Image 1 (cartoon, rainbow, N blue to C red):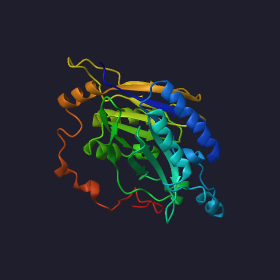
Image 2: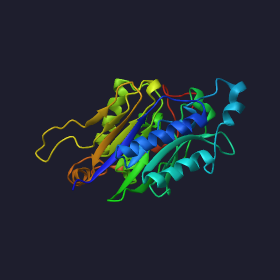
Image 3: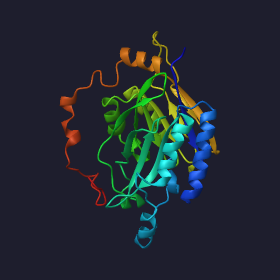
Image 4: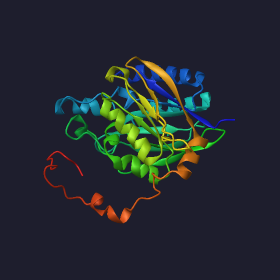
Length: 291
């Protein structure tokens, strides 16, 4: 029997009303379960449809839409995982004592929190200056019944930084989920393909349909045992609202990671010390950057 991990891409229209997004999200998860999903994944900041304040005058009203981890909205999805026997990666604007965070929680099919991740690479040169960056990347073990898979997440702009997927790989991720809310250009899609290739991980990116769609999935496997080249693209969706299932053969991915040369096999960490230095040289100095 093939060891297949099935991920449901919920490429849906955004809604700014949390009550409406809850109803729509529950319906989508039920449909994903009917399609055989092990996990359903939402686009970025699903509870308010990636709404951002237009300026300081709207900041307080926007911050009131942030929710804590114990909020009924999230608990409904947690309960749903148990009813459906299916994991859910739910995204939301998270309430904190300071600025809110752009977060995702992955609940397993028993309602257990596998991980919570907050977007680290916030878009500080635009409206995400009103959010607080996360401080670490996390990998959790997701029980899918017939197996367990090591899963991690990055959010939207995180994918532009190779370090994001790299640290998740080093921490043991086999599959990386990428909630998203922006136009997925050709180069951004190729970027995800490369992240999957260089780290030997599966990647699934989930975008809003009214942000241009093109949710995608990539396999890490780019060649077979005979060194024949393979197409690592599993799926690139169109711009329409839809739910699609993408499949990862965990046995094949693990066998590939055992024999191939990328990932963490031949890295030379002693030569990378410049990566963790905090000084920024021209032409990359930006006054609005938070480090």
